[in-house]
Length: 420
Image 1 (cartoon, rainbow, N blue to C red):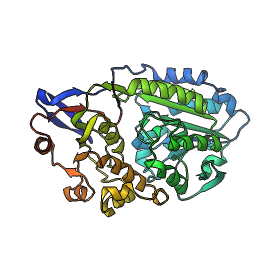
Image 2 (tube, rainbow, N blue to C red; image 1 turned 180 degrees about the vertical axis):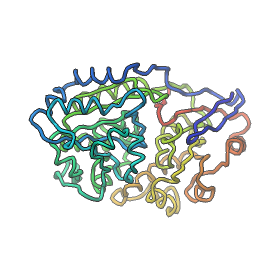
Image 3 (cartoon, rainbow, N blue to C red; image 1 turned 60 degrees about the vertical axis):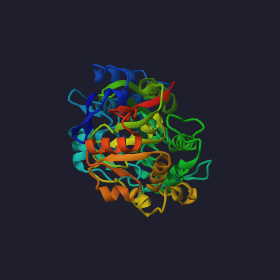
Image 4 (cartoon, rainbow, N blue to C red; image 1 turned 120 degrees about the vertical axis):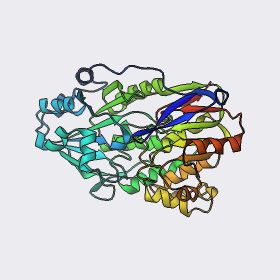
């Protein structure tokens, strides 16, 4: 078997003997919506569990549209459409003027966007004609009081000051939030650092899992935070492996999100029968493999198909290195994986939570990374290193033998493997 796997903006080739391949895990073939603008307008005309956005906007002066940061891969615009333009048309119909509309980038605790990243993500028409602001989790946040968990909810003042508040983005599975999208646009999207920290510090709780929302303490708190922050309308999409939009949902925070969540689960669930010794897990190329931090979803999806003691061969360029100084430092300074797993949750910081989540995987599996991060830097952080696919295969054969059994996942950041 021979297959090209995305690596940044290029490819790495994998060649395997048939005896070593159980299968290639990919999404079922699905066709993207042929006319996105038409489909979006239809979704906006007939929102789920909500009035039309134009009706919500009537008599209001200002609007805030939260948009995902570029690493999330939301296809806001392509050559034939821009998802934000029909949304703006609805706000205009409601009487809200351009100068009173702001786009707030839900960066969570991540860095601010550059102008180029904003143009690439949202389109030049948006960036040139509207206010586009990156959320800063350390500044300009307002307390909305305490959640039932005791966590103080700090939310961006830009959001709080708006008369109409809209969340947008992409729904897919998430390794500790259950699913991305919807309520996650508030927490962590536009919340204060301490609010995010306390939420993510629950990552060691046994109820936390991929594709699980209800009963997941991280997801449950996100739900409560979004209700308290006041979301008037949402617009979210589900995409296939080709990043084509296959579903658009618009309307009520909870009802529209639930329909999108079900569509996501139907599309992303991939069945497999037996667990493998090895999984060749490709993050899916840029921007999904921009850093090791962003590759955690790939790692956590890939682990689901492995026997205990198995190996994840991670194909991820990581042009921005580890992607989080805190994540990097926590892995570097830990004396062992067990030290991370036994930490007091009250001491887990933003970024540190990802290191702790990473430790949960590293405790059971080897992660052999093909990336641009230097060998010694990876090995200091409990990873294994391979310069390329040939070296990775040699390492795998030495550990698991010539007859190792494996899966290949070309878009491991997308799929949700389920054993049958």
